[in-house]
Length: 504
Picture 1 (spheres, rainbow, N blue to C red):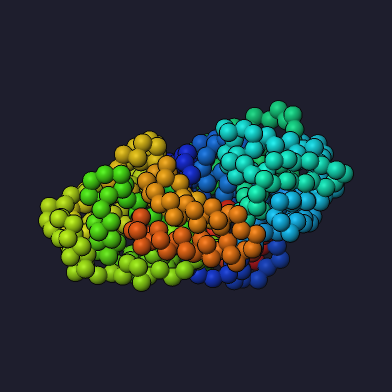
Picture 2: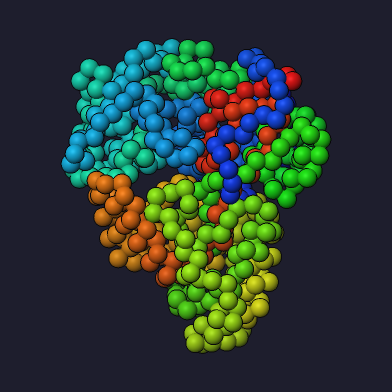
């Protein structure tokens, strides 16, 4: 087992629905650049940024859990690929009725949990029913339209009150996870799933170790062991890589490309992602309740300069990133134009002396705040930066909505629902957007559902509901002897079953 031996890196708790990294790029898997036969007994060390506070996939929020536990440890009837396609998992196939009200899944046979217990249709019925009926379990509301969940033989049938175009997608996440009925495992520190890996050790503040599940129903994992090393600081992660202590760096800084590649042992890979660098506006009162002020801020920001500073990612001018249904290039809505920004501020009565506060979690670098402070100063806005620990951010911003501006990187895919929820911390409330989103959910045609989202997203952008500073890339430094490392959307979900390591 690989260990980092001389790093004093502090861990960060992923207590909320948000997770960080920097930011478009290519294919789904990074290929090795040197030849060599894969070693089936290899241990692969993968650097991650955010460590979960506990491992309870049922109740604990935070993308840090989804990133490593879904697919690798826990599975549902269906899964998603890094490219966001929905594929079979515990169900070998499924059908949907023409009216969109009945989903029938055929469960695989011969599947066992990590403790050796057999997966039964009743486990599926119990898991989905309990999820739906237990508000404390994460994503329970995603199954709210499911009126009945029944099993007949190996067939599992879900019956809906009305069509839900997001159901299959939701079943690829926490809403669809299948657990063993009556299991007594301590979910906060242990796990019992059906995936290709077994969780064998959690050294809090340091690492989480997975070992190959030799009883797995599918193809065996490429590596015998994967160790997730939690190293929040990029420089410390770089040092660990150059010292041979880690094989893969996720959440990396593309500006360190030259340093990580200098030895020839690593290659930097940029993959697309659904990461959205979101500058939220509290619209409940004060200057930011005026659309002209919000639009002025958007047009004062040089988004291309942000991409250049990050050395990765691409611009994004609306709430839907390129990988998600409903994407549209909305750069026409808020083009960079400081003079237009000044005119809007003058019209709103804020020609000078407008002072606002940016609340940002302290684990982010100073790059984004520095650019924002400079750009807004040019149009007459003084931006004070309040860098706070994540727990404070969750309390003040996320829960109490006590902020002017806030920045975090939202990694979740297909999360437009937040713009249709006036109680979310974005504070955005538009009945037309809410209606379009509801219509999209009720649509039985994928193209129609995506078009309705597209319409809603344009309205959100035209309302200057927020500013989207960039669509981040998955920035991954991969050892040249590593094959099968995903490079798309790895900050949200990281399926490591195909990772292999050679000695060449």
